Image 1 (tube, rainbow, N blue to C red):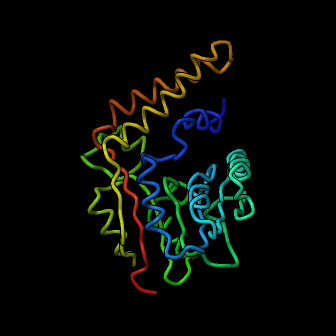
Image 2: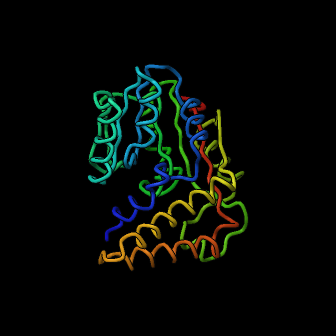
Length: 245
């Protein structure tokens, strides 16, 4: 089973691919919109979960998403059609880092997709290119709550602590106007949801040739979380405005 198929199973019960509950997602979107007819761009949109929620709550909003996964974009189109918002959603099948648009956006978001750009600061640099004057960026990425183990750094990346993360963001010309640090419950719920969904799928499909592989992957990932980074990894979402043009 390929990575995309496993991800779809893993996120069956947690479609937002980040450690955030529904209330946190709604609040972050509300803080990100500066006007009801905003134009929104999601760089690394996956199945379009953030955009679909935004479109469903704001009938005048227009949205665009960019992702390299054709399967994820197909999911987004299907979901948009089911919600009746397909006419206000445009999807682009390409690398988010290479995306270029003829018009700017009032909100540019990229949550949990910094790896597509090479880190948080390159993600912000990419978002800046698409931002309308007075617009906002909603970005989400990891940080270290405590000193990580070498195994955790190897698995998740070379993050820094929260204060240093904010220092680096502000040094690049951004001012936070809202932020959310995922709670322990949100972090744990996300991990339990992902690896539990995979384990359940494997147990429900014992005759599938991929069943043992999916179960093994779920067991390994759960162990890595509990033993290597549960006590050190944190996740922060920031709503940012440019400090100066």
